[in-house]
Image (cartoon, rainbow, N blue to C red; front, side):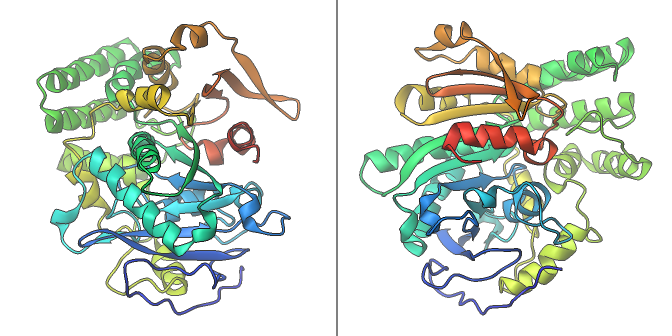
Length: 444
């Protein structure tokens, strides 16, 4: 069992965290954490793991921020303990943790996710632009608390809906830097299995499942009909209804596949989980979507929920009135009108108007943001090197003699296909993820 040492943390003021007083939190190595007040009544929580790499000072290694999806899923919880942090949910040290090579910043974003909170539900974010602006404001507060990282190479790696948030965030942060409003050594962004073009995912679900033997022709036809209803709502500009129809399309998939796992089509699924998801969808499409996109099977009896609201909350001295993931369902539903809107234009802006590296990676076994859908929107990006990239070589991604996937790169843009991985690439194939990080940051 990792020794837990409890420290008092003053929760007054706009920014919490002190670069001169590093703390032992949960797991090995020095850590810091705190809140940034990004707007009136909106408080964003962060948790920084200084690298345990053999260096004289952590600032010799890059700073990488991790953004979870949902929207409403917790980086400090799910991303940290289930995917890439130094210890897992049972507090056993993880063999593959990013902290061994770089400084990792977990951000509970948007406000209402994880330990982040709003004082009034009306202060939750309603669209991607507000999320991006909140994150820019967060960076101001973070650098105030940790000024030694201002000149350290900064990268953002995001998963699922986190990729949608990251694209606009990086663009806004780049503009803030160019305007001389913030000092930040921004270098690049990597978006994994990211919700960039929702309709491209929806339209490729049925062919993907049919080709993998998960659907038969009857199921294929039913899913395609549901996808058309989603497209119809989208074309009318009724984005809330498009989100609802998207949820109903997932429900059709569940019925015809007997609950294939949306994050990895090869995973075994339990009858209990199937019943729970079906009950959620019967309540409403939004309730079902929340279970899949945000909750990840976490319940009050779940070990992650218990850890975050027990030892972690106590160790980090989180305010008593804050419950980890206590506002996440509201966070998700408040964004239902923005959920189905694409952000491919933001990716294009990153390629056309900035100098940052842009990486896309996709797990071959992911359904929710399947590889065919990702390839579809990537192939339609408008940027000067579009044709040159399309004609560039696609090479095997070899790690220690094993083909872990494939990569197609040109200048600042790269697309990675990841073998033996579903939606959560960092935990499904950490060797491939490590190579992506090495290509992006030179460490991993």
